[in-house]
Amino acid sequence: MLHYETIPVTAFQQNCSLVWEDEGMTAAVIDPGGDLDVLLAACKQLGITLKYIWITHGHLDHAGATADLAEQLGLPIIGPHPGDQFWIDGLPMAASTYGFPAARPFKPTRWLADGDTVTLGKHTLSVRHCPGHTPGHVVFYSAEMNRAFVGDVLFAGSIGRTDFPQGNHQHLIDSITQRLWPMGDDTVFIPGHGPESTFGRERKTNPYVGGT
Image (tube, rainbow, N blue to C red):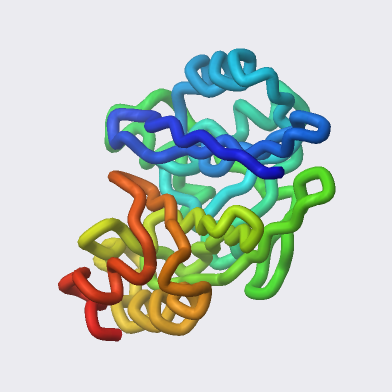
């Protein structure tokens, strides 16, 4: 079985998730934006071994500690889509601008595209490219867990910002309606910030995409 635990990190309270399988207790970390001491302590407490870093998009609060963690543990960096390389290249300046600890750029071990998969032990998650918040944003979906890790595409009661460089509101709406909704109304999603929700609840009540 797959399991997950979400740990808010950085001053922006970004939902970093640890996903692990119980056969070998190997794990992936989704969006290690910062606070590596907290994340590594959680891994130790859970008894899991990190094997992969999965990145939804290149914004500082999601990817800021990626280079340090990959170097420290010798981990491959999986994702995002190549459209976010300019965000990754800009991590040092973003860290300085927002008063974050120093962040280094990186080149993913493997870029992701729509329809790709990632694996953890015997388990497979599907990847959807969901641009709009950033051009290279991806989402990780586990049919087995009925969970989607959506980064900053969709929130409980809101949607991702599109006023950043290369953001696109229509692309974001299309990503939500064409690539998230088909996963099913009962799918629980873990957003980049704030509480979990379901796609069905957001389809009914979210003021930005309700009724779609």
